[in-house]
Image (cartoon, rainbow, N blue to C red):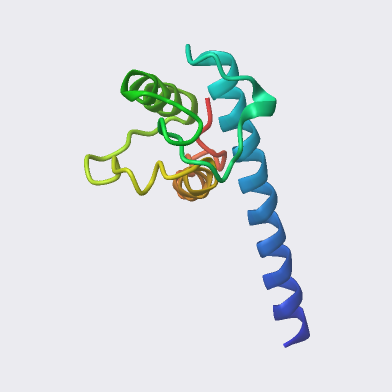
Length: 113
């Protein structure tokens, strides 16, 4: 039983680190690759991605979606493209981490580009 708790705690910590890494990657994509005039240090991971938060307009959101799909090797389904998913970077990072984590290639490597 004690080993099961240790294993669960280890998995939880790995998931937390994966999401933290994903948050950092998303911040860098926004700051470095999207034409939105946003500096890395200005990005709050809990603020809305839209104009009432970080300030991404519809064109920047579309660019961001395309960059995410290319970078992480998946496509958003129509049902996944909703404002709730893009509520903030933290929510999006959790979603992408799960999606990428579930996409294990035959070689056993995660499908990152």
